[in-house]
Image 1: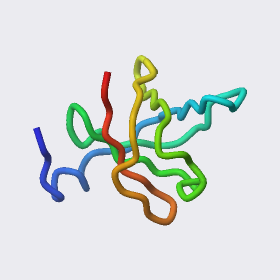
Image 2: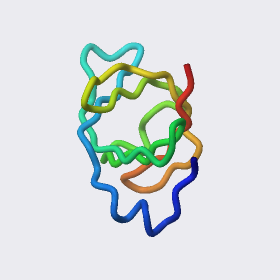
Image 3: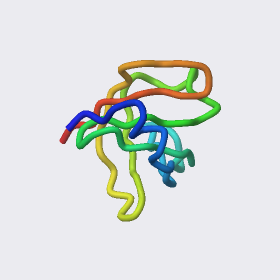
Length: 82
């Protein structure tokens, strides 16, 4: 299910964590799930993140592998997969 830009603006960002393979602890960020397999992530380190990592979103914070599909200043969009 793809959401319209109006629907995305109304969705509040939720707490999320980015897990990196060689980093000792997760990075905190905010995320908006834009579909079952997509998320928009706000993080100041957007330009420094690798193309692949895991994203864990509240409420369960279950990590899911993802790949960056768009990168901007202070934000990224990712595709989530299992």
